[in-house]
Length: 245
Figure (cartoon, rainbow, N blue to C red):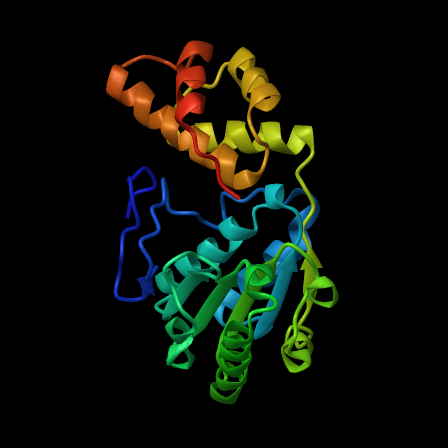
């Protein structure tokens, strides 16, 4: 697998079973823990099969919840385990997408807040929790709010979301964001001049997913045009960058 591909690279162990396009393959190693070290360690343990069977992540959009869930699935797959990432509330999917997932080692449910107040979805997620527990499988879920703040109609589902540890993800500080940019660029072997780093931190979202995707785009365009990263090049990329959560 390569980190600069234009879409998901399926393997027998990892399937993103929706048409989800990834600029790169998110990994746990490239997520700079910063203030979220405990949560990252917990996700790593669950992905390996050695940690808590149920984890709930919550926090604002810029904290990289989606990155951690996708990275957990990739880590599980690379360890020979079966994993699925599912963004709840995505248009075009129905509750029956959760059927039979208990046969997998790890399920990652993103955006749980999007199905709050929808009885069919709430029942489907509740039933999945029960089946996963019966089979000794693992689940990592994420939402914008903690379980008690979700507008859930099914009280039993709220109780399931309290089964394991819950972690509030915090945004990276500016120094952490700068470190993340520079480390990601260094791994790719591209120079990132200080003025380019400052421009990115001033004009681009600082969530881990957005920053790492931007570095991947910089790497790709620099290679294609055979030129080092400059502010005009980064500005061009940012105009086309749809961002991520």
